[in-house]
Image 1 (cartoon, rainbow, N blue to C red):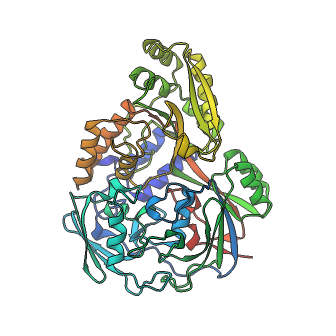
Image 2 (tube, helix red, strand yellow; image 1 turned 135 degrees about the vertical axis):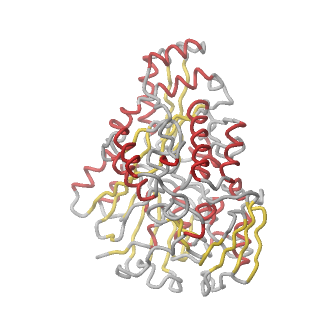
Length: 540
């Protein structure tokens, strides 16, 4: 790969949005070419710590006061206010209400300083972090380096059950080198550390915290009530360290799993914000004078999971056949009404940094799939495929896949499971099923969490030594062009051998009461990348 394949954050979003609006893949790639070479360092998507700009302007522009109700897509007794254990978009949204990170993603997915006042490193291996002074937790305790050391070290303790343990393991030594100074020594160079520290799991908690139901962070809101599986009520932190923020007095956060009920609740005025709006519902929202929808391109995808450690997924021919049976253009138009971009069975979305534009596009080919199924000895077989409303639009995708499979002589039996408990009881547990992955901010994070052989969320149970080696080598490579070559090869390995079929990247569509102002987009996910709480106000 040449460095011409690397694009800046602004270019990334521009091209992604262009593709979303219907620009062809070829034209988008031409745009990338026109964008020219992205130099490493200054101007890069993440760059080195020395070029990190100050945080986005937080000068107050909104109106203070008011309360809103917000409905997410899921809830369960496993809901948690422990950032390390967050597993769902609803968890992430709550966590950003109550906590801050050392860094924070802006709307271009560039990490900005948050609780960290600065991050310095000469070799991308040893990082010195200076914390802001005068920041306090909700209980009044001042933020110190000990809180950061405690928060980050928790992820390396197996007993904690952190969802980012694999990411944290590279932090070989984390120590306080001053009251407001932390030094992190990595096991090897990693220029992506500022972006790793911006993910919700890395939010900072007070030293020694054992009861996370109190949500004692430094964030814009304090916990008034938290009932897992029921609701949470957040009230404004009057001592928040960002002047003038947040605007709202209170946010009640609930879940309405059924999408139609969620939209009805919005239009009836029972809630003021919802996420995961089905494209088919956008006309209803558009027709309401008091509401609108927000459409944001993202790296979100619903994927077909073919377990490679079970039959029939252990067969290379079967796995390849299933990918060929995904009619990507039909899924984009029929299921997502055009609110999507065609994918190519790798988690790096078109327009994203390190996207491998040279990878041959997998296209719908039932004839070739039929040949491969015959070769695998599975012609005429009846196989269940598990789907659920919990995995965005997976039921519709499963029905289309069933129709395609029939043309290839395969009988897929679509098993629709309830949303409640889907992620605990069915996700990654069947030979053939669907999942849904929220966007991750960079290639290292998504490959580490979902494709590394030892990753706890290795959805298809795929193991590839070469891929694992490249993942480690890429972290240590500070030359962006060389790192891009590694990520390109890793995408090829995933595309050719992993048991993950990614037909499209789904735009996030949120439904908004038009009295809610300041609502924008973020490629990280719905609800402004789960970070809306601090930024919006009510004009009523």
